[in-house]
Image (spheres, rainbow, N blue to C red):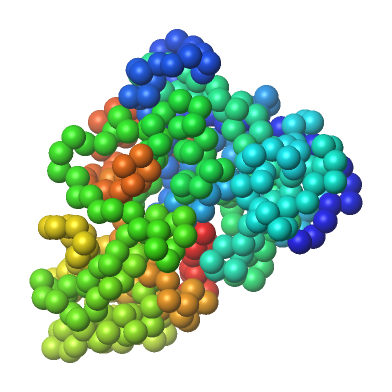
Length: 437
């Protein structure tokens, strides 16, 4: 692990970006409050699967109340932001730098030790800062120092809270795509490890240990706590930790195509909002692609290898304008979770296809082995769209509920409209290898 040769100190705070939609009754975190535990913090999201390739949340940081854009990532625990320090692989928005203010954690802090194997965790003195180094499944990484500060949150019960949250201040980053730093300032780790933001908020009694998101073509929303969880209609399956560590994973699952069993079984799946597309191990991917190709053999679509947006694309007799134009040519997939009775995730064509700027339709399920993910099976953003996805760490389960993920914004409920429009990234396939965190 690289060492730090100069002493660096830090400051961080956090707040929601939307205008004040609630009253401002201040809650003390030092006392129990059942109303708070029944509340949630809700944030609007920006993003889409294509062409942007990720979803982000804008969060105000620190005493200076500056807004930063974070990738939302249910596949990693640690939240980090770009530090105002000499950096390697700096994030793209150079005007968005978090400024240190003497609040680095020392390496004896419990959340520091939780990030390091005991054999590798050596503190020479109480003044040593807590270094972190996190490597993601796509071989990207971030290096920095842990800091903490107050995080102002607007809660849906009309209250404000200001817990002190630990996160990373990063100054050395590597990316899976060469020369392609993201336009965000950092990553919001939504996993279930000790250092994740939801674990910390839950441990302090701010909200229950539940986090969820609802992704749409226009953005959607993110929430902490369980107030937005429907009382009925949610499909639940149990979390599995047998082979995937602390990821949000479940299984085993079996793949169905057009309502029929495919023989593709025993898949352990990772739910990952940090991945643009859905990935299957090489054997499952090839089998699914063969089924889709065979089903298209008598339909007016042709391979379009000139379109490099994704590995597999097809053209029609005329350019397609939307997924509505191609749904009739493709049949639905489904994932059936065999250890939970009557548990199935439907994957209609719009949750595994995209329409490119060239008017072609491309296959949004990719081969994990071809991008260095090995045998991982990942349910990415494309397949999570228009579903309220709930990671319930208290009851050790994952749930989903089909819904219109823009409804809060359109109906004026809870959320305020996100600002700005989306910037457009490079259109080639290599630019769309997602950050699988």
